Length: 119
Length: 107
Image 1 (cartoon, chains in turn cyan, yellow):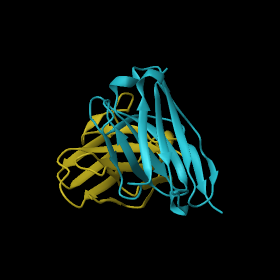
Image 2 (cartoon, chains in turn yellow, orange):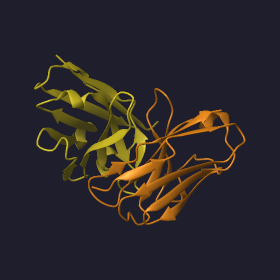
Image 3 (cartoon, one colour):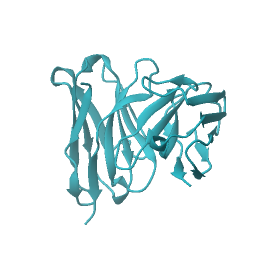
Image 4 (tube, one colour):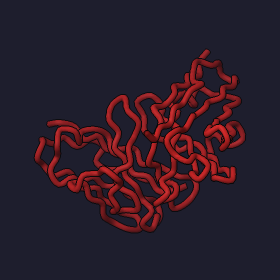
């Protein structure tokens, strides 16, 4: 079964850091591009970051310079290092696989992990 | 940044009715538009990619159309499991962006 499982969410104070992980299974992780997408409580979807098979990266304007995406193909793992967190970063963070038939569309999603930034 | 505007915000319909959802882009996204469905407490799921291509498992009652800046998702006859929030998303340029969503609710 193709699956993505996020972990690492929790409560963090403004200015703090958190590292999210996403474990992939059921497919050849190394050949897929991957992304993080977030959803603030009761709000819509916001794309956060992208990483290619070769670890080229892109970031949304709201997180550039504060978040770092990375991958470990040997461990089938995707990560998001989040620094200088703000209240507006509070959201469910989804790990998403890019569809091979249409790059930068997302055909597999994890269940999400909640990040709450609050004092 | 390409802004995607979805309308209406909410669509109240009965099972069996036709649903028409709109997504308008602030500049051309060519045909690089996808649609997702999200049900409460669940992750989104891909319905349509590149304007009109149904993803694996998407029922034939879902169809997509449009090009450039104006796109439509049509559900020909609503089933009870179709109620939820629908998002469009463009992959034409960075940053990738989503529309604000259209909620399809039971009338």
